[in-house]
Structures are given as C-alpha cells and as structure tokens.
Image 1 (cartoon, rainbow, N blue to C red):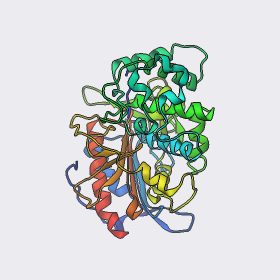
Image 2 (image 1 turned 180 degrees about the horizontal axis):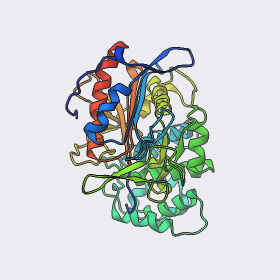
Image 3 (image 1 turned 90 degrees about the vertical axis):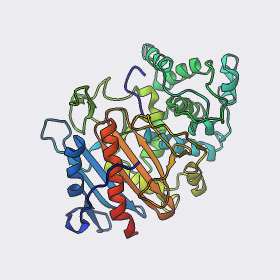
Image 4 (image 1 turned 120 degrees about the horizontal axis):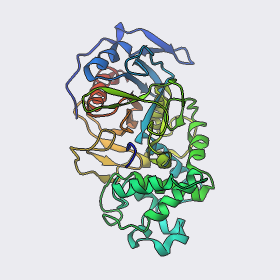
Length: 401
C-alpha cells in the first residue's frame, strides 16, 4: 500500500530470577504483580528497541508486567505501564469478536455472503465474490489477494473524496473491490488479506447502521474496561504522550514517527488493524480471551469464543513473511494457531505491525494463560526480540500455574 502496511524460536536468553524482581503494582484485590523491568531491560540494547512492554496473565489476573525504554529514541522520555502502544493486526481479533456478536444477535450468519449483504452491488460483482462468506473473510480464505498495488491505489483514491465518513469511504472502496477477480475460489486457499477485513467491517457497518469505529468502542473497549484503548496513532497530534512508532532507516538508525498522516495505517483499514492500548489493557484483553467465557463480561457465548480460536485452515509456510503477518501454523477467525519449541501445546496467537510498532499476543485457553509483548519499532530485529521474550517469560512463569 502507499502508506505503511499492517499488520521460531530465537536464541535462548539467560533466565533471570523472579524473586530478584521488585513489585511494580498491585491488583484491586491486593495481590502482588511482579515487575518485569529487570528482565526486559537487556532486550533494548540487544535488539535495538526504543521501548518494550510485556505482561503475563494467569486465570485472568496479571501476575507480572513491565515497561522499559523511551517514548522517542534519543530522548529521556521513559515509558510507563499506562502508555499506549500500537497493536496493528492484533485488532483483527476485535473485529472477529464484533462479527460474532452480530451473528449471535441474528444480524449476520457465519455463512452470510457478500451478495446477501450488498444486493445492490451484485450486478457489478465478480462471480466468485458473490459467494464469499463472513467466515471466509475472517479466516483469510475469501480468495481476495493480499496487499497489492491496486488495493493501495484504491485506498489512496478514497481519501481524495470529500466530506465522507469512514464507513462511506469503506463502502466506496469495497464497491470497487467486489468487481475484481479473486486469486482463488472462496474457501480453498489461505491468503492474508487486509482488504478482506475491510470488507468484513463494511458488512458489520451495513447490518448495524454504525461505523466500525463506533462498534469497537461501544461493544469492545467500553464493556471490557479498556480505558487506554483507541484508534490510529498512539500519540496525540502535536504531543509525545505515548511511545512513538519508529521506522528502521537503510543505515540501521531509527526514525521516530509523530502522530499525523505517516504515523499509522490509513484509518479506512481500521478493521484490519489500527487499535492501540496500554500493556495492562492489552493484558486484560488477552486474559479475557484466554478465559473463553470463564469470566465476565459475557459479550458472546463461551462456545463462540472457542470457535474464534479454532483452526479453519492450515497456512503454507511463509519464511519471508513480514513481521506482524502470519508465517506458519493455522488460522481461525482473527486468530492464528501456532506451535513453538518451548511449549508442549500450541498457542492461539497473533502478531500485529504497522511497520513502526510490533505487538504479539499469545493464549493457551486450556490452561487459562496468556502473555503479551509490545515494542515501538517494526522490522525483523523487533520480531526476533518478541519471540525470544515469549520463550523467556513462558519458561519462567507458565510452570507456576
């Protein structure tokens, strides 16, 4: 796309003693939360990260958390636990949850087709597009190609239109997109397609009468108490009030990206990945998902959450996949399923990046465990860092369940 596009095991890290780490916070119930700052600090220099945040969650409770580093490279602007980090394509799980709510409310079915939801566009639809279902969009099996130049041009053209809300811009884009041929028959092949999530978001807007932005705030952020959650660049225009995203320049130096047109993906592709929130709120979201209905609030039935986490299709290995996009394993509905050498069981997993930030979320619902990791720079070294950190945290903290 014209602007930044969304969104195993690395070398082992010497294990650090949990007992040596200080208490950083306490839960409402007065239980201790172990600080991870001592564990996280070496990763900054080792992997060239401006900032790093992580948390480990057991049975819905954050048992360890930490943030280290600076909001803006080259400055002494320390990050804090309530600082907002961008989560890129990890937003897709929120869109799939909104879809699940619509299904349970009877406004959509998992097999609702594009033609059913947009009957006025049928005459201009490609034959294959007519049969694409909501479930196929959410599992990246719709046949819509992954990000390409033509899609990038469409989005750029949409932003040249005047006085339109985001739902209207999405509708304009999908009206053009549905006439384009698919790269595979729906339901037959995995292709990680942000445009598919834009189309799913437009379907939700059509049946609800609200923008995707209104839906995610009213039905996900607010009921789950994610007070730091928002959309777009994590910092405020004109301020460095959150960890800025950074791009890696050709010479290896980091360039901080202020809030503005270059600070995030285009707002139009929100359903595919424009959310931000603090590591503590990200941990709360992860713990709620890992519980699969064990704890409130009850936004959908437990069986529906389990469905979102269940593999729909195997992904062909993608060794050259960009950080923040799936490279192997399986894919469900807004979630990947991946096996790693350090765990006897697979994780429900997603990674997200707008190429200026990177965030990973990992769940094991059977054990009600989760962990989240976030940094404010994109690229391979950041990807390597978060994978190494995941192994470090899991080896030390998972055994305590």
